[in-house]
Length: 135
Length: 186
Image (tube, rainbow over all chains, first blue to last red; front, side):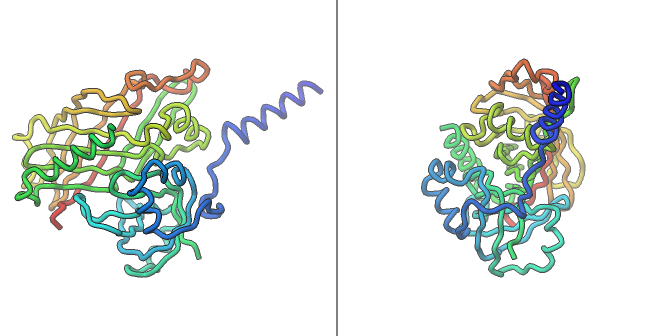
């Protein structure tokens, strides 16, 4: 009985702790919903406060899509909100691979609602990973 | 403070020689991969939102990466990486600020692949170290690709690996930087 319990506990730890899967970011509920300009200004005006609020969180953003970039079979949605020394600055979303097929339906200038995991602000852009389009 | 220093460097980097603006190249979609090979397991993480810039006239080369943007195969390892090892809430980014040593041997106006050595300060977890690494720059039809593989001893940057997982994480990890930069003048 003890051996069976230990074995079950071991399997549980292996499956649900050591090998637990990443969240389903596209299906996950957003921690915050705001627009792209708001989150960009939040980081620019008080990075520490914005970081403690949004870093590592899933946010849903509404914004006007200003550029769609691709590199190395990856797609990025860009919301340009200012012009800096490195060129355009704003919010950049790295799309999930499963969302790449939706890129062809998007148009520059279109208003879209997206969701992603905030990795932080790098002094030019607010960066999001695991991005998806919210229908 | 270090972030401010980095920004200041970037500003100076771009402000100097403003009349030659076309000689600045940059990307926001560079890649940094790190790889740990240990007896118990091999671990790989990739970040595909790396900022990088190059001044082809002065040879200044910089990159910056947000630590939370590294993606691991295992969610638990990603959690440990951010929360315990690099403490990304305290030290959100890593950066390199340096210069090409053999600039005269690299012709950025001509297509080709050029070997280069780059020296500068690599900052990880708030610890800055002087490093000199080899790499290549590939000039191709107006874009400049930069690639380098180098090795980092985790202890040098204050990354402590608990004894319980020493068989899972290498003391020295392999870092691969791969950036494809376009002219900022476009």
